[in-house]
Picture 1: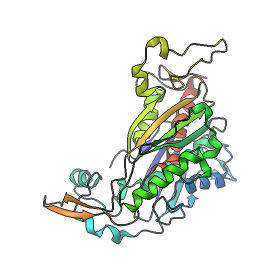
Picture 2: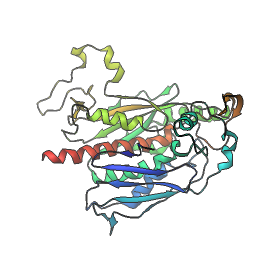
Picture 3: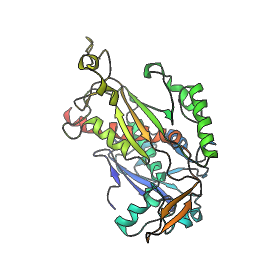
Picture 4: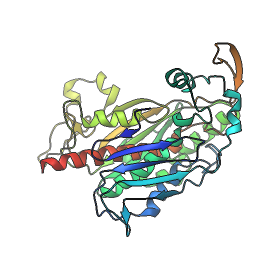
Amino acid sequence: MAGNSFGNLFKLSTFGESHGAGVGGVIDGCLPGVELDLEAIQNELNRRKPGQSAIVTQRKEPDEVRFFSGIFEGKTTGTPIGFVIENTNQKSKDYSHIKDSYRPSHADYVYDQKYGFRDYRGGGRSSARETASRVVAGAIAKQMLPEIKFHAFVSAVGEISLEKPLHEIDFSETEKNIVRCPDAETAAKMEERIKQIRKEGDTIGGVVTCVIKNVPVGLGEPAFDKLHAELGKAMLSINAVKGFEYGSGFEGAKMKGSEHNDLFNQDKTTKTNFSGGIQGGISNGMDIYFKVAFKPVATIMQNQETIDKDGNLVEMQGKGRHDPCVVPRAVPIVEAMAAMVVADYFLINKQYQ
């Protein structure tokens, strides 16, 4: 199976399955001498881990990361950083009913057709459990570039949206509620909606917005490696993501050029930021901002018709522990992928200096 690595100079290769012994990765390219706050890395994992609140999957995993290489006396050595996160709370029997059947909108069918074999326990390699490794790499990328700040938050759950403009949002409020929406009133509505959906045995989608501050001018490599293109690839590689837009996005298609152009100030900033901090595929020093759309979780606790491996129609119902809405736990994953992209292009940009 190819496609298990991400990045060019700052590169992560991941391994592991949802119900195997664990998941982990190897990080190449981290600068030497970076003093790591291991507690901060663990805190990032705690933001993603299952069982953290009443509105996420109740699988209980400590998600404690163990490092094997690349760190000495609390600092990175510049050599590959190897790590593992052990699985401790698998319940593989919850998936025995799908051993020979394909769950709708899951990777079951395509994995079976492509490889002729699949790990049906929790989806195996296709499980979002793999994203824990990305969070570790993203946390290290953040510490390699401490002046750059990554602020992701839940901006929508179903039809409930946070309507505040970005400049009015207090990012320090994001972690003060279990939905990770930086507005208490909107968060309460979202939480209630997720709880209602769970009672119905159903799931619901949502949107995570991310703002990256203090990005230097010059990150990005035209023509095919534009910064926003790599951010889009990074976000679309996350499980359950169905859409990505940056800057003005699709709303920009409704505007005239005279409305959309970001006019310069004398200090080389721009009066508006419809470009989303990126012009010509290169960062311009303004805030980078984008939205990531997540679909409803495919596993629902309702009867659905599907097919088995022989093409017979069968009826099945989801079992086990699943998120009714993924976006609260997706926030640190979005930040992690964004941090890896920025770290990668930071290292590439050093070649010009």
